[in-house]
Image 1 (cartoon, rainbow, N blue to C red):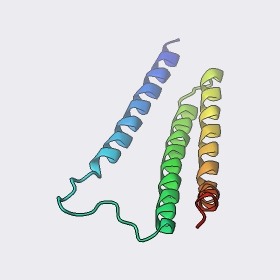
Image 2: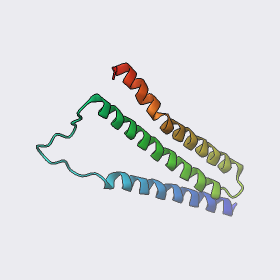
Image 3: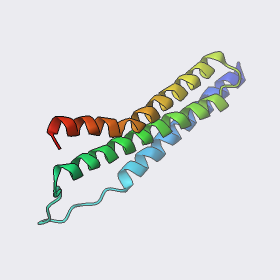
Amino acid sequence: MRSRLRGRHWSRLALVAELAAVGFLLTAASAPAEAGHVLAHAPNIDTVLNNIRNWIMGILALLATVFFTIGGVRYLLANGDPGEIEKAKQAFKSAGFGFALAALAPVVVGILRGIVGV
């Protein structure tokens, strides 16, 4: 009983540490904009759609990597607990789904190009 509680403690601690690191990385890259400059200037709609595709792919790949990492940590710290192993497998499935969506982002942008008429 004690080892199961200790394993859950480490699992929660690892999850909190992971979320803190991701939060730090997301907030550390922000910088204030200079006054007088145009922030959103694109020469054409094709550039805008390419930028949208790149952002979608990046965000989805980041989230999928986080889920993959969480699944790996849960699997390592499961200590034979079937419930934790199932949660880890579900995290792996979510990560695979996220990577698949990231791979399909160019298709979504192609559909948007067809709708816009570019």
